[in-house]
Structures are given as C-alpha cells and as structure tokens.
Image 1 (cartoon, rainbow, N blue to C red):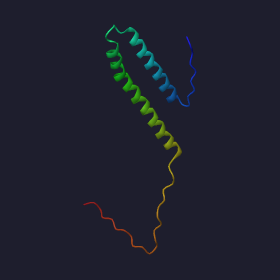
Image 2 (spheres, one colour):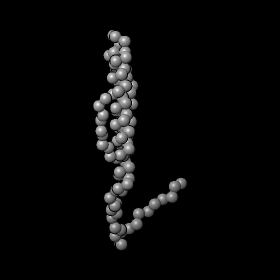
Image 3 (cartoon, one colour):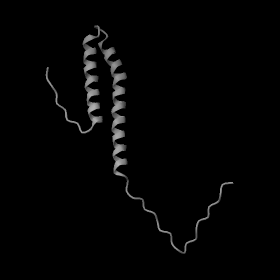
Image 4 (cartoon, one colour):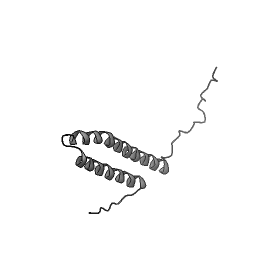
Length: 96
C-alpha cells in the first residue's frame, strides 16, 4: 500500500487532514460495498451528511485559528482625541 507524507503547521490542520482522509476512505469503501443500483444514492447520502460535517468542522477550525491569531497579536492601539482645555464638558444625566 502506498504511503502519504503530509506537512501541517498546526494540530487543527493535522486533524482536518485526518478527517478528510477518513471521509474519502469511507466514501470509497461505501461505493465498493453498496449493492448494485444503490451506489449513487448511498454515496450521495454520505456526501450530504458527512461532507457537510467535514466542511463545518474545517470552517470552524479555520475561523477559530484566525480569531486566536488576532487575539494573540492584539489590535492596533486605539486613538483617543485630546480634550481641549477650554472645551465645555459634556453633561451626562443619571438614569431616572
């Protein structure tokens, strides 16, 4: 059996690659095992259920890694306009 070597940068990437390989393996096995006349329907059913789940999980991982990178990096410092010494102060009212 041939072997495949993959390079990944994060554990999330590794997990997504393993899930994709498992999905394709399952799909191919199902195509071989399904009775004649039911192969297309069986493969479509798997593709719709497990394919969507795979897409959801990889999308979630991609978004989570983007959020984590943004949080780790931190945003640019916010600029606050200086208060002019002679400017009137804004009044705030207490809630009634």
